[in-house]
Length: 395
Ligand SMILES: O=C(O)CCC(=O)C(=O)O
Ligand SMILES: [Fe+2]
Image (cartoon, rainbow, N blue to C red):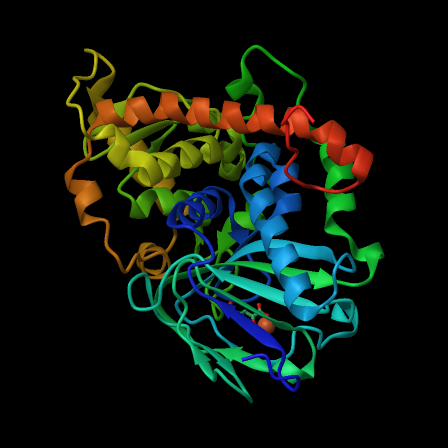
């Protein structure tokens, strides 16, 4: 595996299922339309820019562990910095031909690559096999938890077959010997400016803030931007069976895209849930949290309080449908692109607003905890200009 002509390493089950699921939750809550057709991505700097700095925390120990292993295997202890960390998903039609990862003048600083597979070939997506042009192994079927590491130069020319169904998700990290490309330094500087002040209402100070609407607009290759396509946040809610309801008068908005920043409620079927979310990303994050952790809230049967779920009126339904046709111009495209191969039939069948309501509370606790971790770590990160797990063992 480690011949010097093709220096590479494959690690089986390197990430736990829980780590994979947590990163999947972050990606499905925060991703934007990516740098290539049919690709979505979530970068750490994007998390900082959208008031989700606390969601960096689940990456910290994984980055640390990967860098240590990579340095040990390639014999370059203490030489490397992380240049880029991103969650990247490829959907139907996405592929990449033979290339090395340093094959552009602006990518020359990349020395090593680590790709962590967060979901699995055949189970979560079809197609998407990884291939090395030369040496062994030749083909890798991505499996959740596995990692492939290789040099970013021409000794490891590789490709990814076209994804034909589902969403293929990875955590991809590039490493550099050039410390001027240190992602940590850039992130620490950005998050020192963006971190909300301590507040009694932590979950309130950690509410996501959407980026500009075009960052979430997906359109297929051929179509011109506005006529077809869909808003990614809206479509992710749609494929999980949720509708979006705004109580405001639509005539207040000259541009309907402004609604993405406005408070909304969620509906399913003909039921409207009372809770108001501050914007579309807030609603999406809570929904994705529920779908990540949902089974934990499904065990006890509790009834929702009277009046918290109401039946949609005819005019409310009309409003929902009208806005949906504005934000998801091509429903079939949205469903094809975001189709989940390991279908969530069970989740749909078992849906209950009382369980959802419990998850809303649990989401607040979850982000509150992450927020605290960042608050206590940041002074150390600033001092060392490095993002790492701070050990509080009294020593
Ligand atoms: O996701 C993979 O397996 C590799 C992707 C890749 O080659 C790249 O992003 O450069
Ligand atoms: Fe690559």
